[in-house]
Length: 221
Length: 391
Image 1 (cartoon, helix red, strand yellow):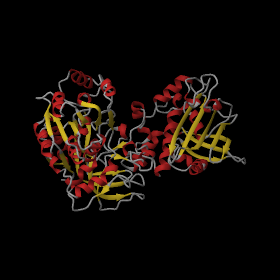
Image 2: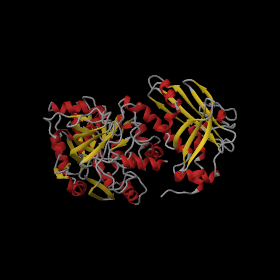
Image 3: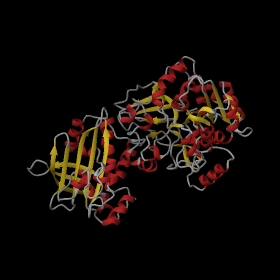
Image 4: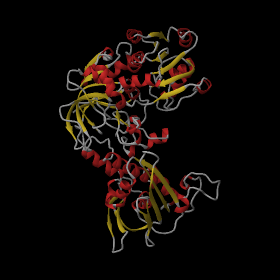
């Protein structure tokens, strides 16, 4: 049985950030910065700091993928590919006339689908895609994915950073984490799926039958 | 199909379950012709490995015939293959440096969280070995779905019987890697704790690698006899003081390398072991590490400690001081099976290695539960059980 607790689905809203929703000024720059002025400077990424970002939560995670940077960037930048590894994203389509504006259809428990308009805040070919939630968006979030060459033959380091304002406050977030629905877990799992798809051409599953696989996918949503 | 399922602590049964299907493009379906019960299956049987679920299909030592292939499998229907117990993608950082058992892509993302919390990094996928390692159905069944079938399974020639090659799936490469991790030189004396299948194969491997002397330690007379037949000297820990005997047998230097082929359910009378048994019983999750502790005290300064034995959690009273002050090297890990299979298959074909001496019992799959019970409770005579599905 699915838990229909409102805090649980509400807390998934921030995860829309992963899908590229966005707008509003959040301390993402601070989170991404490697040196921080307010403490002894070190080399650790800002999002690993033992500090808070006010009302915002910051999630950051990196994976190294043994594929060329240009290939990974191109795959991610073709947003039609994102639902292949982001399990909560049903589809994404261009919205309006302006380039870089998209509508994201995000699955929520209970069969609901939310449509969210997004725009790309910054893009550097082969290196970075940043997004922002729009002013009339219900969620206040921004995020970025960066692609850097890894040392030697190790491929590409892909880093995802998301800042968001938790819905339902701390309690909602705690419940979401317990239910494996926190943005952090979702982002981590989605990045792992991206790595699997790029390195192996498929996403690992222990399902023994195709119907069991389908069932597992629905459970993950 | 019929399959051996875990139902709870010390409770396994053969049930009828749905046949496996091709789910991902690189999959193959294998009709299992031979499968063995592994000593590490007994850790599952005894309920000391977390994240098991009733109905889980066990078995990670198996071989058989390819009956179905996915669009990206490199196998062909009708081929006979032995399947490594570790599932490896072949394309990630760890697979590319042949550390296959650390594959980053074989454990499904939603199954990785537990081991990532417990160990700092997620484990790779393993057949039939709890949900922490992916929840993959194992090979003690009539059929099994094999992911990444283009990387793991090795095709074996028809003239080699199942029993000659089956142990390439786990215990032979595991014994071999244990000896390799002991970094054996020609004048070395090597001590091996545990004369189960992995311990015996470690003895065999250490001798092949040129050790001057191999000393095997156990308390089951028949298993010690098997070690002697392979060319080892032996110590029965119930009748001799192991550390003193090892010092004497190595001319007062201490043994150059030690191999712990026992793992987390060590037998023995030491006080800390009894305490750990109590903790395991009440579910505190302590590993009984008495063999490893003894090995660390017995090895000479500057010596090597190799640990193929399975551990899952924490242990108390670990002789960390001895490890540091004696300047020991410690090497361990799940076996990188794919790294060793081809070489070991060659040695089997040439007659350099024969593993069939180990098999004490052959049972139809339907009698698997009896096999588990006897393998656990009558260890002296039940050295290795091979199950025959459909038999």
